[in-house]
Image (cartoon, rainbow, N blue to C red; front, side, top):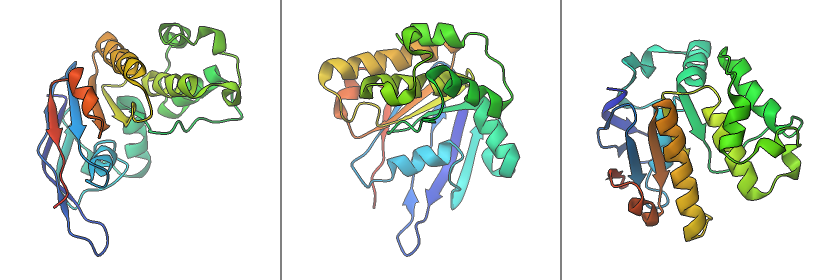
Length: 210
């Protein structure tokens, strides 16, 4: 089992705790986490990515409990095993497209000789030396996906990757994520309120705030 969660909950100050469904995910499997705005689905993604700490419960990734990891050990584990595609690309504007991918390798202490092939797969080979400031919105999103895949993670987490896209672009992005996850044998979790994505990934859970 690649990912297993049990009895997860999260508490914002002075708010009622959010309780999440248990998750079981194997390598190569895709899962949707659906929920309306404010339901806590992005909070769940942050918990799975080790970016937030649960109030209760346990998260196991490749049999490692995230709660056992702190500080630099957690950062290193995340860098080596988890790729996160944020809703808005957080790219380093002082670096080129290729250098943004190299930076991901540097922080995770992993070397990937296939970065140019990855950019080619995502239709970005001609942008490798470009400043990220010159990219279109769609190109920046694909670079964000490439950076999440740069370390060949075991788990890919994508936050609202289709929220601002039309139907055709939505299908292309979902297919892209699924193809790349399959290529490296990673599990894929997409967090979204976009019900259209169910047309492409049938396995889903819903998060509802109480």
